[in-house]
Length: 546
Image 1 (cartoon, rainbow, N blue to C red):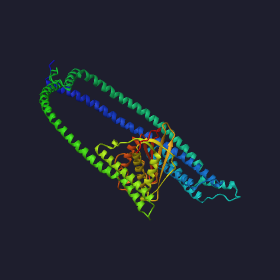
Image 2 (image 1 turned 135 degrees about the vertical axis):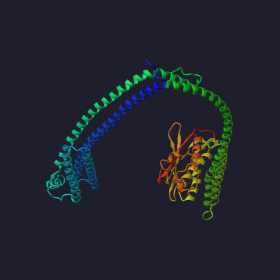
Image 3 (image 1 turned 60 degrees about the horizontal axis):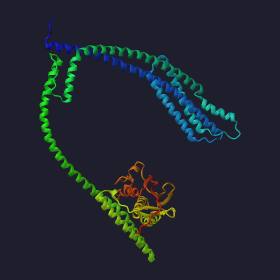
Image 4 (image 1 turned 135 degrees about the horizontal axis):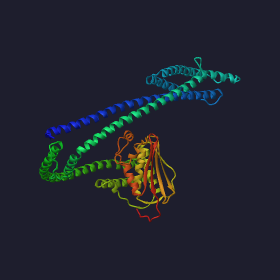
């Protein structure tokens, strides 16, 4: 037998492959077209059944709503509590159901055009026309129907009501609804039977076409598997060698067909890649050294610049916030002392003492700001001694009254326990509570009230809850998880008070946690906010003189 030239061999193998793929593709296209048609048929049958079920359900719901309306009328006739709003809601529901039935009836006309179906559709349209008139009749009749006069025959009143509900355009509505439901039941059973028959037929068609495609694919797969197994194995081994980086590997495949040509191309590519890899490796090493050195320099410079900018911004923000509360307290005390006529010396002394306390608080705030400028807010220091929280609360109340008075806000407190001993820093506790009182006053409107209370919690170990409640603008629910984020301010807070930096609550949380406690906020817009500080009470420890 004469061996055909290499070009002819290549063309023969390509033609065989092309014809096989074309045959397989044609079968797949035919099966896809059949599948699309089958899906369309199935969807049409399912949609017909769904529309029939919805129409049947609509008639049933209409009868149910009408029965509820009849019950309402019975309650109205016999003096029970039957509200007009309930009647209107039932009538509105009946109108909605009737509108849905009309829409479904129009859809059924499009989906089903058989002789029996056309007869049912005509009966359905006639029934819907009568029901539409009956609903209008019910609306007019119920609107003008009043409870029967005293002494009127009850049977006569009920007969009038029954005539209103059961007769329309000379037809018995009860019989009309029952016949409609029965008719839709028959239609629904027919649609389900049609759907089951169609699905069974489509299933047989799908199985047949799928089996044909599977057999054709199997035969072609067996044929090409025998023809391609050896060449593909050699090419696969060569590709795996290239993927693993073994560029010295050569594919042992001779001949003049497509596979041999691909093998020679892969061998040439491997040789060229080996040479290029050597050159690129040398160049990449030199470039990586330069890039690494420059990247380190730029990273260091950028980090230093960002850190300096962040610290600068935070320092200005912290100064504006932390200095506001004590300066407000000092100003408030001074205004109280200067307001009105001359006061006794003791009152001036008391005001000056509170101003002194606020000044000391101002000094502590300045120290904190310097600390934050050097590191971060968590570096605040605490000087723990035995503290009676009641004394701190009294100081906070005294300073807070001045701030509240300056803003036209009323500040009062619930009676708190006689003593609340704990281990902590009195100045930090005072700073914490004054910041919360300041927030409550700032975001309250003139004439509103801020309330303080302290409650001992029976637990092990014992705790105390300090609650600061205001009646101010409140916080939206989506903003509550963010209130302790540094420099965050809710939109309504910004619109109420443009000044502020959003640092009070983050600092307060650090101070609370520094004392082993927790802080939480509950709020509702325009109904106020409650800040709850929970602190542990301690056993008696020796007090250190101030």
